[in-house]
Length: 84
Length: 207
Image (cartoon, rainbow over all chains, first blue to last red; front, side, top):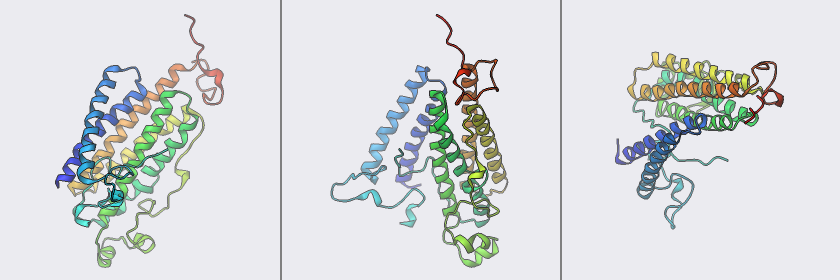
């Protein structure tokens, strides 16, 4: 696993933890303890996302480099770094 | 609306192409109990869901299924990458190859193209949620069957993740159905459609 893949996996882990709790909250909207837990995971995910985007380019369609539309840069999610 | 995030929900890094596996995994892309049908089912049914909890649940699970569709498509792409015509013939992949080469196309393992006939949007939330519970179990069984043929750890790991999500979604749909029936007038239970006949909800109890 490359450094990029390891960071992406870490980000996905926190995003997934938040997402799974969000589904639970859809059917348990008054569970404030879970809301707090979900917010903690989400916050950690946001920090990791910022860190990832700074090193490897945008995850959503925008420019992280004012001189280059780096959104289109490889690898796309179905590709590995060896493809590029 | 939808905003694309340029990453998978769970990583897919297949090192060895395997056409036999690609052929059976195709069913979870465009087969009867696959991820395309799942996402279209939930994202279509949500419009007539009566409670905020149900609108949220169908939207969020339907969106997650689109992420799963992308993961299964990635499996298809990586399992067929860089193969030769000779390997295609030897693995019995020629009948897919002749129509799609190694393009990712929504069809079942037997080559039946995706059809909306695989899913229903009945406009009755009791009926729709029962369909959703069944759909999650059918997808879970398909993943169990795929695991019987998996000898590649990297593929197994991804299939196990997707299988586990079916179990979690089943749980959430069960809670959704319970939330709905708890709010219905029990005298009317199956005599009314809660999305169409508004009188079937319990009268608010007097304070």
